[in-house]
Image (cartoon, rainbow, N blue to C red; front, top):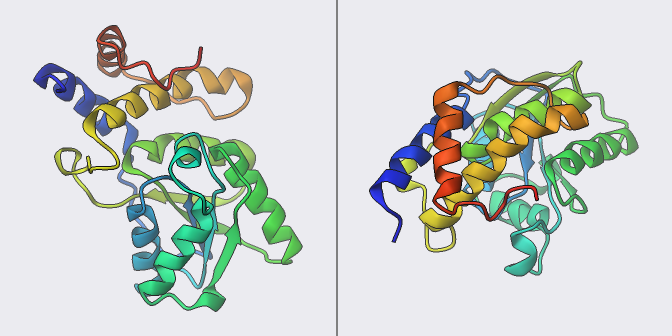
Length: 215
Protein backbone atom coordinates (compact mmCIF):
# COMPACT_ATOMS: atom_id res chain seq x y z
CA UNK A 1 0.00 0.00 0.00
CA UNK A 2 1.30 3.47 -0.91
CA UNK A 3 1.29 5.83 2.07
CA UNK A 4 -0.72 9.10 1.87
CA UNK A 5 2.51 11.11 2.33
CA UNK A 6 4.03 9.48 -0.75
CA UNK A 7 0.90 10.31 -2.74
CA UNK A 8 1.06 13.95 -1.56
CA UNK A 9 4.70 14.24 -2.62
CA UNK A 10 4.05 12.50 -5.93
CA UNK A 11 1.33 15.04 -6.76
CA UNK A 12 3.97 17.79 -6.52
CA UNK A 13 6.09 16.02 -9.14
CA UNK A 14 3.02 15.32 -11.30
CA UNK A 15 2.07 19.00 -11.35
CA UNK A 16 5.60 19.97 -12.37
CA UNK A 17 5.82 17.38 -15.16
CA UNK A 18 2.58 18.58 -16.78
CA UNK A 19 2.92 21.74 -18.88
CA UNK A 20 -0.76 22.47 -19.74
CA UNK A 21 0.13 24.14 -23.03
CA UNK A 22 -2.71 25.60 -25.13
CA UNK A 23 -3.17 23.86 -28.47
CA UNK A 24 -3.44 25.24 -31.98
CA UNK A 25 -3.72 23.45 -35.30
CA UNK A 26 -0.45 21.89 -36.46
CA UNK A 27 1.04 20.04 -39.42
CA UNK A 28 1.28 16.75 -37.57
CA UNK A 29 0.32 14.94 -34.37
CA UNK A 30 3.23 12.90 -32.97
CA UNK A 31 2.14 10.29 -30.42
CA UNK A 32 5.03 8.83 -28.44
CA UNK A 33 4.88 5.18 -27.44
CA UNK A 34 4.14 4.05 -23.89
CA UNK A 35 2.27 1.35 -22.03
CA UNK A 36 -0.61 3.81 -21.55
CA UNK A 37 -3.03 3.33 -24.46
CA UNK A 38 -4.88 6.48 -23.44
CA UNK A 39 -2.14 8.33 -25.32
CA UNK A 40 -3.36 6.72 -28.55
CA UNK A 41 -6.93 7.70 -27.69
CA UNK A 42 -5.85 11.32 -27.09
CA UNK A 43 -4.01 11.44 -30.43
CA UNK A 44 -7.06 10.07 -32.22
CA UNK A 45 -9.29 12.60 -30.45
CA UNK A 46 -7.10 15.48 -31.65
CA UNK A 47 -7.07 14.20 -35.22
CA UNK A 48 -10.85 13.80 -35.26
CA UNK A 49 -11.21 17.35 -33.90
CA UNK A 50 -9.20 18.61 -36.86
CA UNK A 51 -5.99 19.66 -35.10
CA UNK A 52 -3.73 18.09 -37.76
CA UNK A 53 -4.13 16.18 -41.04
CA UNK A 54 -2.24 13.12 -39.91
CA UNK A 55 -0.61 11.26 -37.02
CA UNK A 56 2.80 9.67 -36.56
CA UNK A 57 2.80 6.89 -33.97
CA UNK A 58 6.36 6.33 -32.71
CA UNK A 59 7.50 3.47 -30.48
CA UNK A 60 8.87 -0.04 -30.57
CA UNK A 61 9.06 -1.98 -27.31
CA UNK A 62 10.47 0.04 -24.41
CA UNK A 63 11.66 -0.71 -20.89
CA UNK A 64 8.14 -1.52 -19.66
CA UNK A 65 6.29 -2.71 -22.78
CA UNK A 66 9.00 -5.22 -23.74
CA UNK A 67 7.91 -7.27 -20.74
CA UNK A 68 4.15 -7.04 -21.32
CA UNK A 69 3.56 -6.71 -25.09
CA UNK A 70 4.72 -8.52 -28.22
CA UNK A 71 3.34 -5.93 -30.67
CA UNK A 72 5.29 -2.64 -30.95
CA UNK A 73 3.73 0.35 -29.25
CA UNK A 74 3.25 2.26 -32.52
CA UNK A 75 1.38 -0.59 -34.19
CA UNK A 76 -0.84 -1.10 -31.15
CA UNK A 77 -1.58 2.65 -30.99
CA UNK A 78 -2.35 2.81 -34.72
CA UNK A 79 -4.88 0.00 -34.36
CA UNK A 80 -6.57 1.86 -31.50
CA UNK A 81 -6.74 5.07 -33.53
CA UNK A 82 -8.23 3.25 -36.52
CA UNK A 83 -10.82 1.63 -34.27
CA UNK A 84 -11.81 5.13 -33.12
CA UNK A 85 -12.32 6.40 -36.66
CA UNK A 86 -8.92 7.70 -37.81
CA UNK A 87 -8.42 6.64 -41.45
CA UNK A 88 -5.43 4.41 -42.09
CA UNK A 89 -4.10 6.76 -44.80
CA UNK A 90 -3.70 9.50 -42.16
CA UNK A 91 -1.30 7.39 -40.05
CA UNK A 92 2.46 6.86 -40.27
CA UNK A 93 4.19 4.26 -38.07
CA UNK A 94 7.71 4.32 -36.64
CA UNK A 95 8.05 1.12 -34.60
CA UNK A 96 11.79 0.72 -33.85
CA UNK A 97 12.48 3.37 -31.18
CA UNK A 98 12.96 2.35 -27.54
CA UNK A 99 13.27 5.74 -25.80
CA UNK A 100 12.19 9.35 -26.20
CA UNK A 101 15.33 10.45 -28.04
CA UNK A 102 14.91 7.67 -30.57
CA UNK A 103 11.22 8.57 -30.94
CA UNK A 104 12.30 11.98 -32.24
CA UNK A 105 15.32 10.87 -34.30
CA UNK A 106 13.56 7.96 -35.99
CA UNK A 107 10.53 10.14 -36.73
CA UNK A 108 12.85 12.65 -38.39
CA UNK A 109 14.21 9.86 -40.57
CA UNK A 110 10.72 8.62 -41.42
CA UNK A 111 9.55 12.06 -42.51
CA UNK A 112 12.68 12.52 -44.63
CA UNK A 113 12.07 9.17 -46.31
CA UNK A 114 8.47 10.18 -47.05
CA UNK A 115 9.70 13.62 -48.24
CA UNK A 116 7.27 15.34 -45.91
CA UNK A 117 7.93 18.88 -44.69
CA UNK A 118 6.54 19.43 -41.20
CA UNK A 119 6.98 22.73 -39.37
CA UNK A 120 4.68 22.29 -36.39
CA UNK A 121 3.86 19.36 -34.12
CA UNK A 122 1.45 18.44 -31.38
CA UNK A 123 3.30 15.84 -29.31
CA UNK A 124 1.09 13.51 -27.29
CA UNK A 125 2.53 11.71 -24.27
CA UNK A 126 1.62 10.58 -20.78
CA UNK A 127 0.79 13.50 -18.43
CA UNK A 128 3.95 13.07 -16.37
CA UNK A 129 6.17 12.95 -19.46
CA UNK A 130 4.99 16.21 -21.04
CA UNK A 131 7.95 18.25 -19.81
CA UNK A 132 10.58 15.63 -20.56
CA UNK A 133 9.18 15.06 -24.06
CA UNK A 134 9.21 18.81 -24.69
CA UNK A 135 12.84 19.10 -23.55
CA UNK A 136 13.97 16.15 -25.68
CA UNK A 137 12.17 17.39 -28.79
CA UNK A 138 13.72 20.86 -28.44
CA UNK A 139 17.24 19.40 -28.45
CA UNK A 140 16.74 17.33 -31.59
CA UNK A 141 14.34 19.61 -33.49
CA UNK A 142 14.82 23.16 -32.15
CA UNK A 143 13.49 24.92 -35.25
CA UNK A 144 10.04 23.30 -35.16
CA UNK A 145 6.97 24.76 -33.47
CA UNK A 146 5.98 22.43 -30.66
CA UNK A 147 2.96 21.93 -28.43
CA UNK A 148 2.76 19.09 -25.90
CA UNK A 149 -0.39 17.51 -24.56
CA UNK A 150 -1.58 14.33 -22.83
CA UNK A 151 -4.75 12.49 -21.80
CA UNK A 152 -6.87 14.75 -19.59
CA UNK A 153 -6.79 12.49 -16.55
CA UNK A 154 -6.26 13.90 -13.04
CA UNK A 155 -3.53 12.44 -10.85
CA UNK A 156 -5.96 10.67 -8.53
CA UNK A 157 -7.66 8.88 -11.45
CA UNK A 158 -4.53 8.07 -13.45
CA UNK A 159 -3.52 4.70 -11.91
CA UNK A 160 -4.99 1.57 -13.50
CA UNK A 161 -4.58 -2.17 -13.07
CA UNK A 162 -1.64 -2.06 -15.50
CA UNK A 163 -0.24 1.23 -14.11
CA UNK A 164 -0.62 1.00 -10.31
CA UNK A 165 0.23 3.96 -8.06
CA UNK A 166 3.60 2.46 -7.08
CA UNK A 167 4.68 2.22 -10.73
CA UNK A 168 3.44 5.75 -11.37
CA UNK A 169 5.46 7.22 -8.50
CA UNK A 170 8.59 5.34 -9.58
CA UNK A 171 8.11 6.80 -13.06
CA UNK A 172 7.67 10.32 -11.66
CA UNK A 173 10.99 10.16 -9.81
CA UNK A 174 12.83 8.55 -12.72
CA UNK A 175 11.67 11.21 -15.15
CA UNK A 176 12.50 14.07 -12.80
CA UNK A 177 16.04 12.76 -12.33
CA UNK A 178 16.42 12.70 -16.12
CA UNK A 179 15.18 16.28 -16.42
CA UNK A 180 18.02 17.24 -14.07
CA UNK A 181 20.76 15.01 -15.47
CA UNK A 182 20.11 14.79 -19.21
CA UNK A 183 20.84 18.41 -20.26
CA UNK A 184 24.53 17.90 -19.40
CA UNK A 185 24.56 14.84 -21.66
CA UNK A 186 22.97 16.75 -24.53
CA UNK A 187 19.74 14.70 -24.37
CA UNK A 188 17.40 17.54 -23.30
CA UNK A 189 17.29 21.31 -22.97
CA UNK A 190 17.79 22.69 -19.46
CA UNK A 191 14.69 23.31 -17.36
CA UNK A 192 14.66 24.78 -13.89
CA UNK A 193 13.38 22.51 -11.13
CA UNK A 194 11.83 24.42 -8.20
CA UNK A 195 13.20 23.60 -4.75
CA UNK A 196 9.83 22.29 -3.56
CA UNK A 197 9.78 19.80 -6.44
CA UNK A 198 13.32 18.59 -5.83
CA UNK A 199 12.66 18.23 -2.08
CA UNK A 200 9.61 16.07 -2.88
CA UNK A 201 11.75 13.98 -5.24
CA UNK A 202 14.41 13.39 -2.59
CA UNK A 203 11.81 12.39 -0.01
CA UNK A 204 10.23 9.92 -2.44
CA UNK A 205 13.63 8.42 -3.22
CA UNK A 206 14.31 8.00 0.50
CA UNK A 207 10.99 6.14 0.70
CA UNK A 208 12.20 3.65 -1.89
CA UNK A 209 10.74 4.96 -5.16
CA UNK A 210 13.97 4.42 -7.07
CA UNK A 211 13.07 1.71 -9.61
CA UNK A 212 13.69 3.85 -12.69
CA UNK A 213 16.57 6.00 -11.46
CA UNK A 214 19.77 6.16 -13.50
CA UNK A 215 22.35 4.15 -11.61
